[in-house]
Length: 105
Image (cartoon, rainbow, N blue to C red; front, side):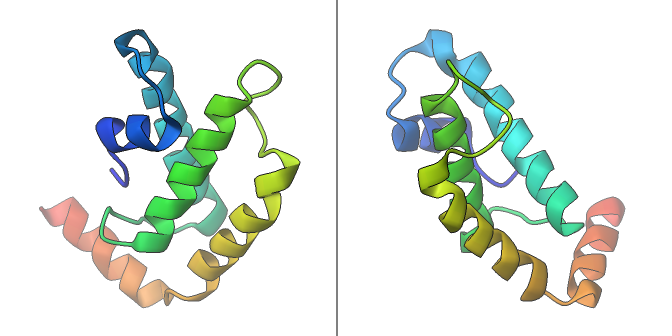
């Protein structure tokens, strides 16, 4: 898990426990989307991955009335920039080592 429910609620300014289920769903979507887009597994120690997920969840949460399948125009550049860094800045062998150790552990 890259981000936790409570920190995400603070970031999104969600106030009610009734929203926990939808926020957790959006967390899962953001983390799975990051993995699918980069073919890499990140954890909560990677600041860029954390920021990507928080921004994506906030955008999806703020715009849930209209769509939950794409970033709004105003955060698109930020998301693309972070995603590109995550795709290019981490060599595959490091990610493979992390995946193998996660399987063993």
